[in-house]
Image (cartoon, rainbow, N blue to C red; front, side, top):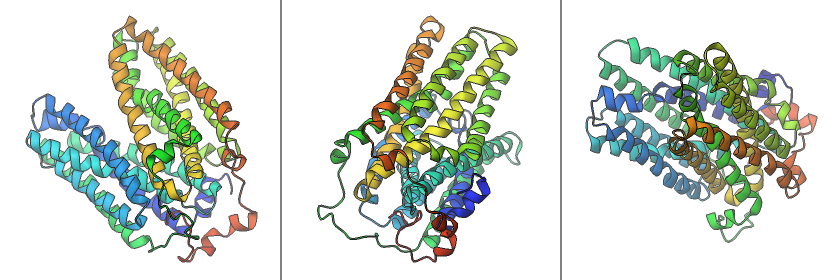
Length: 441
């Protein structure tokens, strides 16, 4: 496949492109309301201060349980049915937020939305994992990462403009945003129902014992190590980006609100550009090497953040942006690569559960990050937190060489598809192929 991003997209099967397109619309809808739940419940609806915190906690807890449940369902039912149901539940949940006026209503919406959103990432990764080759799988995960970040960022921008200066009262504007988000989920569910063909699982059914259980999945050392590593990766990146990073940089006024906004803009832009420039090229590098490189990049990133927190003014802002740049490059490299590796190791019987546990690992790190930041930021002006993050990043870098000794060679570095196959996937895909990205087989 060419390094040209448009050529890469054209080389995907039509159904892979359909999943990417539908998820682009869905990601835009999610961005419309992404930063606003706390503000909406507290300032717009005027609910007690404990309600936003409880709502987010219930939503996160439901997402963990729901993710494991959806993974088990995916290993038993056709993905076409599951993805449609997941999108409808998530759409209903975010739509319920539009009408929240009390604590019970907020907590009900949190349960429904948490149950639905926990399955969205799981089923989408499952669909991408059904690509015809491991190389196309990796490229699909990379393309999805870029599409998600770009469209979510655009949604946040549009949502902020509507919330700040749109027509109608403030409550009406937020109601419209949540209903719009719900509509994109429902549209995605309808699109998947119509676009995904009814499929039967490809190949002979040689596993009479049925789908693998979670205990069996965790019993595979490579999978267990990778899932634990993903949790650490999420903790030092996603989990700190909106907690430890701003908390440390603003504690002594090293970086002001404008500089902090700039660092978040750097995160979104660099994450997308990294996939556009490196998404295809990174497929030629051993996955264990990418994991090690990411750990080193992140250690350097947090070292720069450490220095930025001890400066002031322009110097602090520029240094912090440099750190976030490295952090963003690492995110864009490692998460799609590790997702592809996990799916290659999972096999057909456990693919749903492995993707569910991947969602749980990312969520766990994202939740543990703010808890760690809250506990350690008051100590020595946050210095112990940043030092601990550097140490964790160094540990991530050491996982790569250890994994290389145990990973199958074709999982560590998938072979490129033959040129003849790479040039003809769109023409060959007539809707009857048993194994495609959209089929999830």
